[in-house]
Image 1 (cartoon, one colour):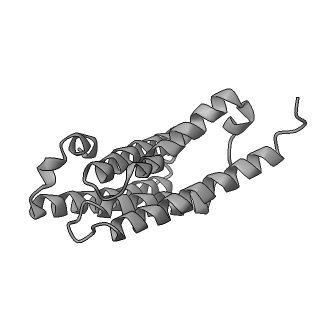
Image 2 (cartoon, one colour; image 1 turned 90 degrees about the horizontal axis):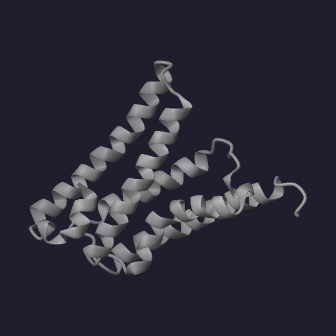
Length: 162
């Protein structure tokens, strides 16, 4: 839905439609948290489910960042929020030490929630530049910091350089 709206932002020209998109994003965020918690409580959590959730979040963040750009809520740099995960994966293909498994992290989860919350709120008519740009900027700084922490951790554990 959000990827489609990024290619047809005029569909959100009416304030009611824009608020509906922001509400849908909030519902998505709430359900994203609830499904993982329910799976863990019922003993249904799996590595596959965790990876699927991560990739679904990454795709949603990319779609929402494209929508933020299409709506003029932030400049082209907002796409970095959606592309950073894919750049990290690509870097791991070039430098295998970057693709090593990372330990579970509350920080990573919190930054993901921050990204989804900010990007999901941006379609709301009440958020316009420069406030919308500033909010997206805060999310980007948090994301860059989180990736830097992970890269540092991976670099320290990669062993001798060849």
